[in-house]
Image 1 (cartoon, one colour):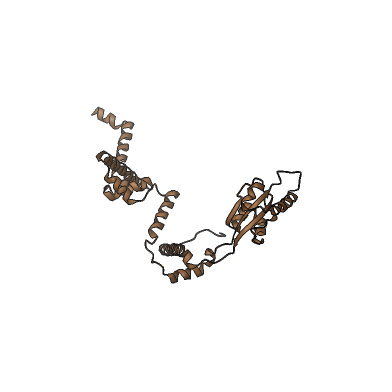
Image 2: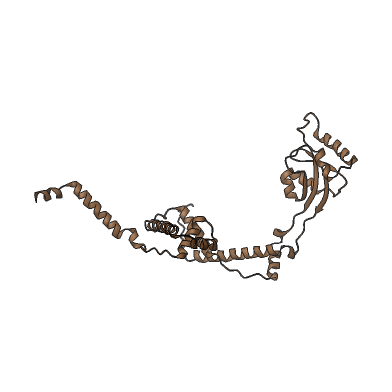
Length: 293
């Protein structure tokens, strides 16, 4: 009895008993008690687990891989799945996803995916033509040019006027009747291309500058006469323009496949937006920013 009374008065014993009680309470009433304790490992669960692990969502490949596994490989796969599922459930039970913005974004992405319609009615040609009429500017084919150029680099002979050198070279090119393929023989080294075939003004401007592209657009097509000099961001150029295709609207048959894809994409987006609006409509929104905000 004396020993029992001493033990009862011992603070360490009180601490151990309290800890044991807390642990037992956690095990019985803790967050995990409300979560399902049953993990079902079926074929579908394993296939999804394999797909997400490899970030590859081709079902047939994983079905064949699962079927080809021997018993030890399958047991390891099951153990990995059970480990992940157990930790996931415990994390959810503890509320670890709350306040995690990355997790929040992933859940929003999954909801967007669930709200995306799986089927869209195949559009008729009449619908596609109406769609083209509404979005004609998106499909307009830009004007393009085919030309070669001879570059006169001011840095090659800094003591001389590059423009004067270009004018003298222009006379020589036309006198010798230099052709399209002769340009490299006369040109200084240029950081981009020598020949430009069916290139838009935007593309040309990205290499030579907007001023050059504008000047080029004003030149006539003449495959036998060099023209210039034209100023670019890098120096001076002599050009031989051999072809020009003006801006045009494409024929329906040319772009029918693209129109169909774009129409279906927009239809999916419209239905998804409608589904999101319906979800948002289920909630009452109270804006509480305070005065002056």
